Image (cartoon, rainbow, N blue to C red; front, side, top):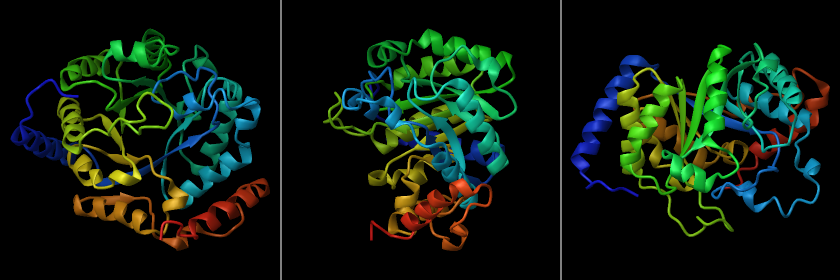
Length: 333
């Protein structure tokens, strides 16, 4: 994964510098972030690392993989109650049409009071979006174009770049997603840094590889915590003002503290309602606390779950009740 000789003292120096830059340029509060998925089907279905690539042949009727809109909106309402940020709306290709996505985003803005980020694929129809969205996310996925072409053959990097450039021309913010552990090296950071500059990226969302069964990465390991930290630290030092969101998994919660010290403004990739009120949710809060930061959002305050009825639309009631009941089950305990 790394062509350079590993120098732990250098990594620690980078983390220290990145932490100082973060404290100078950003809030002392770390947000809990949650992506809201619109569908579990993707018409492309060939990104080599993606869970949806294992589902395309199994799903006979793609319309049945679409989530009900009241369910989506209820999830947004629960995020507001628990003070979680909505990382973005995400969905596979050909799940919802752009005008439907616009309407969903508009409803979520009404519920949460916040504009929505989109991560719904490459499109040339950005003109239909307006004040309901905050920005556009390009699924760049890797820190090198050669890997992108190999691992995401149906999502040309050139098309993503063109979309991001158009997004800026329409005065939207730009974000990209990068998955670490796909075969990139620290040498590839030069390309990533230039890409951020060229396409005026406001937000970078890092994930560590989650090796899914039936993909070519099923027997791969997740990237080392200090490697992850060095990547994040480097981007923070290069771009003091940029927003950085870091994703980790329930089996790597110990990554959280070091990622925050490396420059992360928010933490993502958790099964919110399954982890709420459990020792795992508490561990997330402890990691943030011991990094010297405050926390936006909660995994532990059951009072914030609120009533079992929606405050916005009666059609959401049964889903609100379901989310609350799931949150109170403490499945991991």
